[in-house]
Amino acid sequence: MYSFLNNEFLPAEKTFVHVSDLAVQRGYGIFDFFKAVNGKIPFLDDYFNRFYRSADFMQLPVSLTREQLKDVVYELLQRNGVTDAGIKIVLTGGCSPDGYEIATPNLVITQHALTMPSAKLLEQGVKIITHEFRREMPLVKSINYTTGVWLQRKVKEASAYDVLYHLQGEVSEFPRCNLFVVKESGEVVTPARYALEGITRKNILSLDGAMPVTAGTVTLKDVVQAREVFLTSTTKRVVPVVQVDDTIIGNGKPGPVVQQILSELVKKEGHL
Ligand SMILES: Cc1ncc(COP(=O)(O)O)c(C=O)c1O
Image (cartoon, rainbow, N blue to C red; front, side):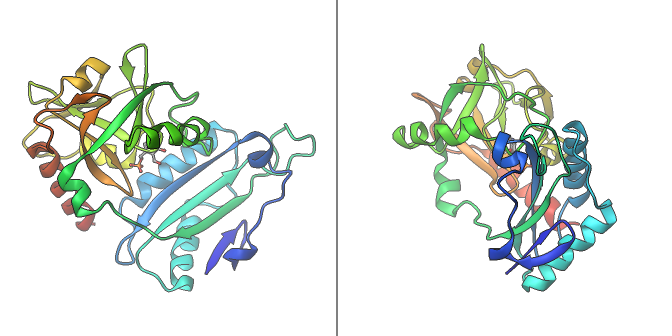
């Protein structure tokens, strides 16, 4: 299998960055992640917009234009002979002589196997726990997942699927997913601030289905009192949440809104 490093395709097992890279030394870097489906990449422009925006905010120049990057991504799929895969583009802080100053970024593109949530998981829904935390730069897709990685033990011990971040009662996001609640009023809301602007979230916000979906303030109270709760991401699409800490959501089963949103999203992915 091939990967791509800066300006060349390399066997994946020979794709390295040096230990002096700021990604290793200081956890400084950004990335993006999207999926190829039947040889096409749905919403690629959205992912690229977020990638270049994160890079710009973190003062990391990207050596390739969007067109060049797109060509490289499709060539990688072709070289690896796959039509369905996850693609990760990482841009690091670069090899820094003093281990602190931003240097010339390393651009690394790798291909990954994709596993979507099982039918059983979607049928049953999942339990989540909560944790008081807010990411430093919520709009940046940073490579720094320290808190999420550290929380995995707590998640496992609680037999939970994921952990929802909140600060002083205002919820934001999961380490790798966005949150939506269906309020008693039927309104579907996702946190407007302190959360990454997920592409799945964006697609759900722009669905023109029957129910109104908006971005606004979501509190912990809104979550535990919600009729339905669900999380979203590129790899998971939409996963229903039926328990938050010790509170059962609704009747403890995935509800109709999450099912409807999932089917509209699948349709939207296929229509590109
Ligand atoms: C912090 C965070 N929130 C949300 C998401 C979901 O975003 P997307 O729908 O673009 O996959 C991710 C994806 O990795 C993430 O890291």
